[in-house]
Length: 298
Image 1 (tube, rainbow, N blue to C red):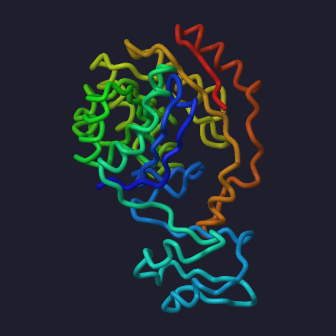
Image 2 (image 1 turned 180 degrees about the vertical axis):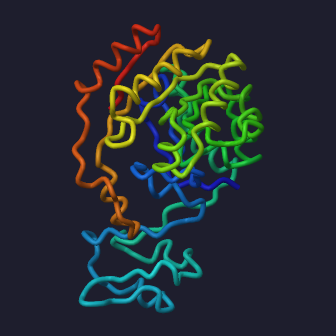
């Protein structure tokens, strides 16, 4: 079974043509700015949108004291919830939802097959994202094999923060790797993501050696890597890879703030301003000087 939290149809991002983006739960990193905080935990998560709550009380009645009303506000004591499935369809207003469910390869294929005509017309396909889709195990490999049997182009968004042996299992199956290169300084990387930059850079070198197609993606984050020296170092590393041809810059925005509120988590980046695309032009120019196709994404 695969841990899925969203299937987004008719997307025109993260690969060519019309695409179906499948979002998987579970990630080994804990990036402080993460735009999909609901994806971090592989298990289902409770999300609560106070703006939609009419206080009908159905969730309180279904709970065992893990959801209570305090000072006219719903208090969700997530650490006390033993059976999250109870809340799956309890809220008619959809203020409280369970994010994430297990789906079989067959169930996912049934959704994807609806859109095959759109892939064929636009040279589109499926993009696997998350979370870290490559951490899903043997069922993910089976899903990709079935997609390839149907002639469907497969892209994957990945942090490459995995043992190489895991990535290698997918190398000959995936058409396009959209691989994050967040930083090349290990101390900075660890402080802001909880991970190991050397693991990522080593995996980039090994992926490069396979000859598989990949695009380097750089999330540009204030205080983390948004400086000339840091971004130039990232570009220099990418340009040093034999088969690297393209680098994408993804400017920071604070649109994930509401998700953190719904998960009952603090968002440390809520007061930071968005990075404008024009601020990244010097870095696209430097990347092009280094022989890379360079783009700024939305």
